[in-house]
Image (cartoon, rainbow, N blue to C red):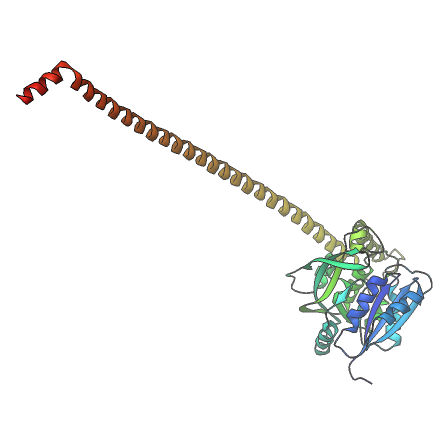
Length: 363
């Protein structure tokens, strides 16, 4: 048996073969030697999942399939995978959704980090957003950009404000699942954010500033092909407020509502985080308006300069034309004066005075 700690990679899927095959290949390409890839088939066709797994040749890692006979929903579907990871004795766990991918050394690098930082409960890595679209049976990449570039690291303070990392970017110690009991199942979205906040309460989350995770986005309303951050953008905003309200009520001693495991006392911090996030959003909008105003002023000045340069060019062209006309006119006038002088000379020669002068000159 390998001495390397067992890493469980949990992938939720439901009838999305095109994406699942890509995720299977991404995990199969890992250079880490001790992985179990747990596929949670959330109410999808079992035979198709088996066929997708068979299509990925050369997979040296173990694949374990957990089948939900009926769909549990996007957030709840991950928990059977977590349960299976504990049953298999995993040391570390990460979530790679069926439409996402990771770099070949993503697991290896993060395991090495946590092995060297025993006081940290998890480690995050830098993430790249991959914009893409579906064309028939092909996934077409459009562009890439870093996600939240420049942030120093994963902190509880930042997590209380917003969901700063996608699940694919986090590798955590499997033991925390016994205390946190997985993702909350009563929310259609943001179960990962809620889990991250509770996870950060247990201990620090390290940061590995290497771009090891690829978060794939498709700008489509099609639920089967889209991302929740796109298809359910409004739901994310509403659910964030509801989660904060739930923790506030749970913190009230007179209220019998219990917070999710490990989340006691989060009400006020989450409320403050929400206020900070709203202030940051408002400041961001104001800065965008200011930048827009400066762009408009710059464009107006540019347009004025362009117009002035155009007018200057037109004036120069007219002056050049007038100068050429004057030169041409003067040249014509000189020619006419020369011709007139020659005529005068001829006329003078033909007069009596001219004839007399020539007679005297002969004498």
